[in-house]
Image 1 (cartoon, one colour):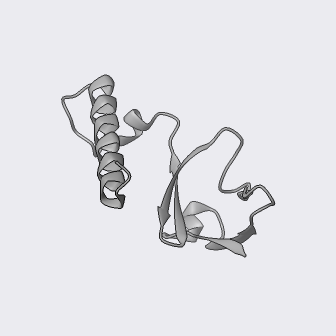
Image 2 (image 1 turned 90 degrees about the vertical axis):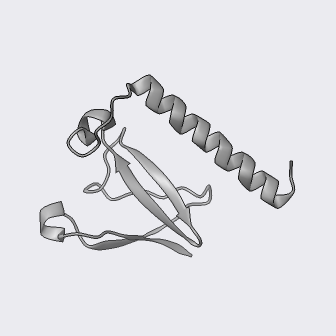
Image 3 (image 1 turned 180 degrees about the vertical axis):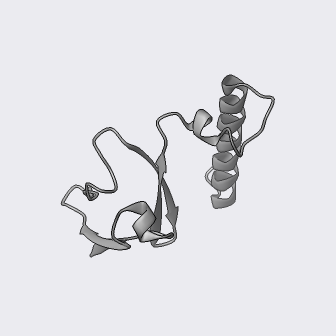
Length: 100
């Protein structure tokens, strides 16, 4: 079974094809096309049912988001909030499944 990657936006602006079909190897890895990823790029992988969403993480995410993300908190505070929320979500999910 192949893994399908979908991209939204103007393909001419993105400089790439609109969609690719790639196949996972025996270890579950997929190779992304060169015009999508280069060695060292980082991606956020979001499982959505039987699909996945890949979001490329900019090299400096805080600076890249400064035009639309306005906050008085520093990086340490933001990281702490994100980690606390992630732990809470995992605990809630485990509690719903009756694991803890």
